[in-house]
Image 1: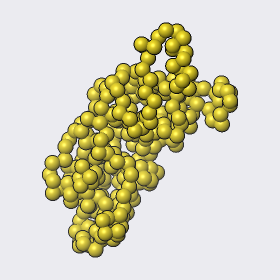
Image 2: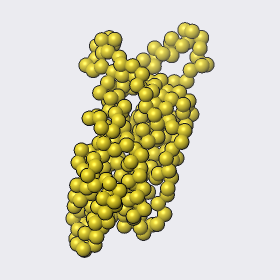
Image 3: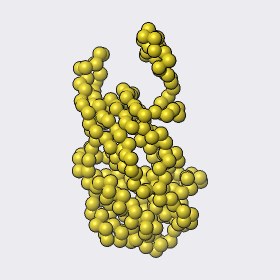
Image 4: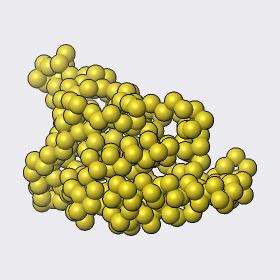
Length: 262
């Protein structure tokens, strides 16, 4: 395809107007750009969109052809069955607009799925939130998006994880309010194994007094109850509501991002 493109451009005498970069889009560093128009491999849709909207390059818009089901998830709003963590994280920093559907019958050979075109425009003003903290928070909330927040935060394993990250943040006492210089350092992968090969739950539960853990749980539940979130489900919450909840939890000394990874 690259050779065919270069030949077509050469035939028109426009070689000096085109630069072709033939590399892995997920691994290579993008040059400065303003507009993206792309029919991307569907299997890299999620990581590529995250790289675009959380990257350091400020661009005007990205018009992308995506698998139709994926596009619906990206466009989903609170209360929609497709509403998910990807939509939450992308819409924190960008507006997503539906452009058109494209039938699989418009392609030769005919693929197995229909497609949709969406336009992604980065927001000019971003909320004041630590992006690493936000990502860790949404991972916690949307692990079971239809479960109430009260039930999620009462789970022993989840409570242990949050206790650890909150303790580390308390020791550092320098969690930044904003961190909008790209997604570097933010990981969406879970790592439940410590250096000794034991699960975090086992290592923490053996070192944290039960009374201290109960007090920590009561603090979290108290915040949820006071703010009216205990019986609410992440699948129904807007970004403004999630931002508010994260802010009050942080204010209470509850943190989600592992500061040791920063």
